[in-house]
Image (cartoon, rainbow, N blue to C red):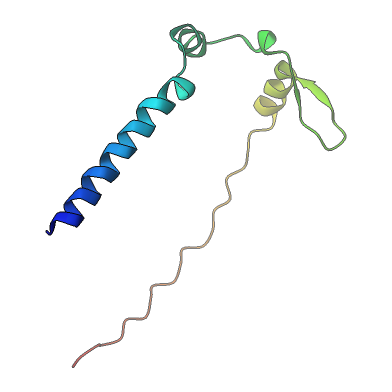
Length: 90
């Protein structure tokens, strides 16, 4: 490697590290928020969710009841046909 390439690589790494150090406090989650996020909450404590398309605000407990009564259906598709292999000789 010549000197200019080495200076560029070291400078790019230093600039990337500097950006990461400066941006980390804005991206980090506080310990209190992390503890609250790791603690499971009951559905009643979550309130309502706006599901849109004319439904408006729906309580999370009703969404959970609907999901339990109507689980999503997995569609089974036909297996894909095996690819046609051609001889690629010289």
